[in-house]
Picture 1 (tube, rainbow, N blue to C red):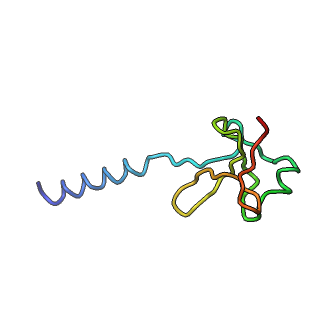
Picture 2 (cartoon, rainbow, N blue to C red):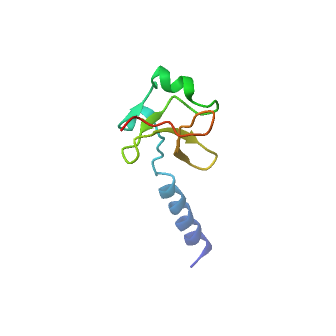
Amino acid sequence: MSFRKAFQALAALLFIGACTETTSISADSEPGTFSQVPDAVAQIAAPGQDLNAVKIMPEDGCYWYRYVGPVETTYLPLRTIEGRPICTRA
Protein backbone atom coordinates (compact mmCIF):
# COMPACT_ATOMS: atom_id res chain seq x y z
CA MET A 1 0.00 0.00 0.00
CA SER A 2 1.41 3.36 -0.95
CA PHE A 3 1.78 6.25 1.44
CA ARG A 4 -0.97 8.20 -0.33
CA LYS A 5 -3.53 5.38 -0.03
CA ALA A 6 -2.62 4.81 3.62
CA PHE A 7 -3.04 8.52 4.32
CA GLN A 8 -6.42 8.58 2.56
CA ALA A 9 -7.61 5.56 4.53
CA LEU A 10 -6.52 7.14 7.81
CA ALA A 11 -8.17 10.44 6.92
CA ALA A 12 -11.42 8.67 6.02
CA LEU A 13 -11.36 6.79 9.31
CA LEU A 14 -10.87 10.01 11.26
CA PHE A 15 -13.73 11.75 9.44
CA ILE A 16 -16.09 8.84 10.06
CA GLY A 17 -15.10 8.74 13.74
CA ALA A 18 -15.84 12.44 14.10
CA CYS A 19 -19.44 11.84 13.06
CA THR A 20 -20.46 10.15 16.31
CA GLU A 21 -23.08 11.82 18.44
CA THR A 22 -22.29 12.84 21.99
CA THR A 23 -25.00 12.83 24.62
CA SER A 24 -25.29 14.30 28.05
CA ILE A 25 -27.38 13.23 31.00
CA SER A 26 -30.18 15.60 31.81
CA ALA A 27 -32.30 15.37 34.93
CA ASP A 28 -35.37 16.28 32.88
CA SER A 29 -34.94 13.35 30.49
CA GLU A 30 -34.80 10.65 33.15
CA PRO A 31 -38.16 9.34 34.34
CA GLY A 32 -38.82 9.56 38.06
CA THR A 33 -36.20 12.24 38.72
CA PHE A 34 -37.16 15.16 40.95
CA SER A 35 -35.90 18.57 39.95
CA GLN A 36 -36.66 19.70 43.50
CA VAL A 37 -36.73 17.42 46.55
CA PRO A 38 -39.31 17.82 49.32
CA ASP A 39 -38.29 20.34 52.01
CA ALA A 40 -38.22 17.68 54.74
CA VAL A 41 -35.69 15.65 52.75
CA ALA A 42 -33.55 18.70 51.94
CA GLN A 43 -33.39 19.63 55.65
CA ILE A 44 -32.00 16.27 56.79
CA ALA A 45 -29.68 15.65 53.80
CA ALA A 46 -25.96 15.97 54.47
CA PRO A 47 -24.15 18.83 52.73
CA GLY A 48 -22.14 18.16 49.59
CA GLN A 49 -24.86 16.16 47.83
CA ASP A 50 -26.47 17.47 44.63
CA LEU A 51 -30.17 17.92 45.36
CA ASN A 52 -30.97 19.11 41.82
CA ALA A 53 -31.37 15.57 40.41
CA VAL A 54 -32.78 13.14 42.95
CA LYS A 55 -34.88 10.02 42.37
CA ILE A 56 -36.50 7.31 44.46
CA MET A 57 -35.21 3.92 43.41
CA PRO A 58 -38.04 1.38 43.18
CA GLU A 59 -35.77 -1.43 44.40
CA ASP A 60 -35.29 0.00 47.89
CA GLY A 61 -37.60 3.02 48.15
CA CYS A 62 -34.67 5.29 49.06
CA TYR A 63 -33.63 8.63 47.62
CA TRP A 64 -30.57 8.60 45.34
CA TYR A 65 -28.81 11.69 43.98
CA ARG A 66 -26.92 12.13 40.73
CA TYR A 67 -23.16 12.35 41.26
CA VAL A 68 -21.14 13.76 38.38
CA GLY A 69 -17.58 12.50 38.77
CA PRO A 70 -14.47 13.05 36.68
CA VAL A 71 -14.99 9.83 34.73
CA GLU A 72 -18.66 8.91 34.93
CA THR A 73 -22.05 10.06 36.16
CA THR A 74 -23.85 7.73 38.54
CA TYR A 75 -26.46 7.73 41.28
CA LEU A 76 -25.46 7.45 44.94
CA PRO A 77 -27.71 7.04 48.00
CA LEU A 78 -28.80 10.31 49.56
CA ARG A 79 -27.63 10.28 53.18
CA THR A 80 -28.21 12.21 56.38
CA ILE A 81 -25.47 13.93 58.35
CA GLU A 82 -25.16 10.75 60.42
CA GLY A 83 -24.60 8.72 57.23
CA ARG A 84 -27.96 6.94 57.18
CA PRO A 85 -29.78 6.59 53.83
CA ILE A 86 -32.93 8.65 53.40
CA CYS A 87 -35.85 6.39 52.45
CA THR A 88 -39.60 6.67 52.02
CA ARG A 89 -41.92 4.81 54.36
CA ALA A 90 -42.94 1.31 53.37
